[in-house]
Length: 312
Image (cartoon, rainbow, N blue to C red; front, side, top):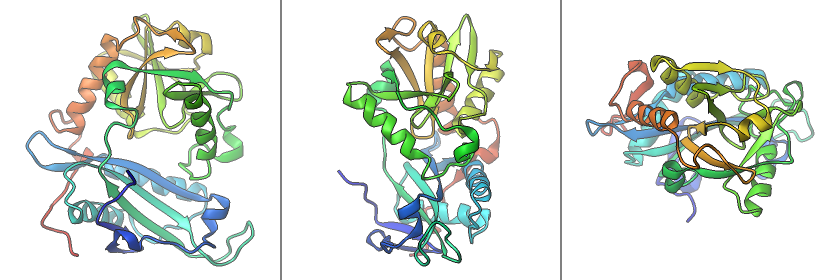
């Protein structure tokens, strides 16, 4: 079924969903220079709805735009308010959100000159990205033949639309071979991340994750680091070799879409006992407690939605 909602927010106003159309000469459509964010709203334990770490996502959107010299014509507060508005307008108590800023139609060729910057926010219902069964039992992964971008070639700290061609190729490759998700190595041969997720392993009681080099600075990754430290667990941001991944006691992906998804197998090697381990289960439990309001680390992490505030 195609993604569908009733309203979207586009260039400063709510519009009917079908009005989210662009010209075929939209610069980003041809050359891939745009920035985006994926965010989620969850039903809270008290029955309300809140977006998890919305302002952190919007701050990263603006950092990505700065890296790529895209001047978003709205403030962070305007985008925050618009996000809440589009959720309320669609009456979505839980949803996935996509914020995107891209270069519109006008001059063609690689230099966009004075083409307008278009900005949109969309919300729609979306379940577990890698499947409900994957959240509970773990998924099968394969190391892709495609390597992650070299940091100085494509600006890996920018969540850029064009960067995801690399991810699409990797994902298609491994899905065609019967696996659930791809794992990409960096240009030096060390484990980088999934096609759309950060990766963690647990070995001998120590949690390890690749350092910020060729990988995206994930909001969920940061949340997991804070969960682990509050639990008194040892965390290392360090390079991980492919064979260390094979012999890990546990492994899991993190991401707004993927949430906390255990990895039970890599390259036909069973990870640990082939099911979510105790550390993964604890982190997953704490994460859902945070996003659903049962635990609070920082009250600013939850942006409450007022369903009486939408102006349609």
